[in-house]
Amino acid sequence: MSDERTLERDGLVVLTSKPNAPELHNPDLDPTPLEERTWSWWNLAALWVGMSVCVPTYLLAASLVKVGMNWWQAMLAILLGNALVLLPMILNAHAGTRYGIPFPVFARASFGVFGAHVPSLARALVACGWFGIQTYIGGEAMSALVALLWPGWLELGGGALFLGLSLPSWITFILFWLINVFFVWKGTESIKWLENIAAPFLLVIGVALLWWALSKAGGLGAVLERSSSLVEAGESKTGWAFFVSVFLPGVTAMVGYWATLSLNIPDFSRYCRSQRDQVLGQLAGLPTTMVLFSFIGVAVTSATVILYGEPIWDPVKLVVRLSKDSGSPWIAFLAMLALAIATLSTNIAANIVSPANSIANALPRYISFRTGGMLAAVLGVVMCPWLLLDAYVGWLVSYSGLLGAVGGVLIADYWLLRRARFDLAGLYESRGPYRYVRGVNPAALVATAVGIGVVLLGKFVPALDFLFQGAWFSGVAVSGVVYYVWMKVSPPGGAPPVAEG
Image 1: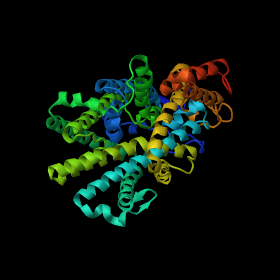
Image 2 (image 1 turned 135 degrees about the vertical axis):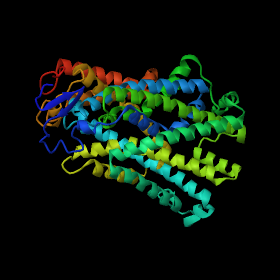
Image 3 (image 1 turned 180 degrees about the vertical axis):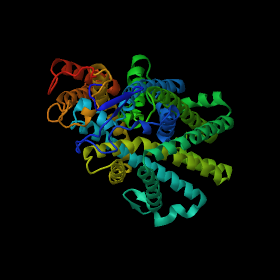
Image 4 (image 1 turned 30 degrees about the vertical axis):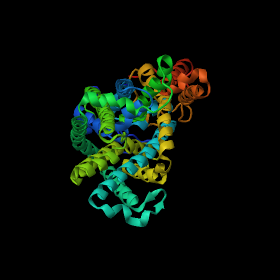
């Protein structure tokens, strides 16, 4: 390394002295000590299982079939999308594992020590919205669970609504919110424990649900044959029109599904023991779980067409129907419990860790990870995203695709310009090598804006529609090229970055 204040051991870099700029560090943002980098490949794989097994994943394949794909095209789109997003996931995770740094600190190298607030807080805002939505989903699952055991539960409050929720919904929403807050308060080790427990349980429940669907509906062939009935009426597209208007947006949506996590994956990989653990963990946990659970979703939804004469998309409604048919509320109780655990494990890992670090990074002298997590949890409620759930989720998916522009800058900076080497101590210095222009790198901000602009160009120019339909790919490519060329030709605030150390 280029600085005597760092020590490298087995490919992992640590600081030998604490940073002294209070506006840039606190114990939660400082590099993770070697003794705390204990996550194995299984821990990271379990994290991905816990995040992937949730209601939105269950609906993915069925929703793709709904817009015009057959079942195997939907599964191909999901597999391809998750394989593609796995690449930036592993590339960005490398910095977290090597240097033990969270995403907001990682972004300082390219955006500047203060400019990093822009992508960091933008990512945090999306996560807070998703936190509110997932907490609403988890609360509704708990409410339905209570109603199965106490039929009069849903009559509490006489049906009156406050901010779109009834009294029973508010009670279970607050209860589910408090459970989330408990794990935030306990810290990252409790999250690791939760994911390790949730992963095998959720996989068993998912496979059991698939077995039920296949055994009741006449086998796999019969179920998949009926999947075509999920397609909504409309003009059938083939050839290039099918690729541009159906398949490409489907793949882009799959990439966009985890585009936000592909940015802040260092928040988790900073705890890994080695690069091998972070790579194997993500390979084992992400694409396999997404494909399996999405397949379960489309198979079970198709089976409901055979069993009930109509597709039941909502797993909560399916569980209620199943409970009534079986006459046993305990089957539904177990399923609802699994749904609540799935939502909890996704919400904690995907929607709290990132904003907690980002908010702490904004004012590290005053805000810790725990405080940042609490503020994010409160903000997720204040935003009331469930009031505009359909429109908000659609906006979030599009926005996640546009975050590819940020990913292009990060990858070009870390891998092409610096060749995976940072001045670790310099990331915590306000007047160090990543100061650029008053702490902001205009090259990164402009490159991100250009990448987003090209994506939006495809929205308003029909002939360039493919740029918007492939938003994530367009954003990554354009912003990465613009940033790389600018930093090579005329880097702001100093000498061009090269492989450091």
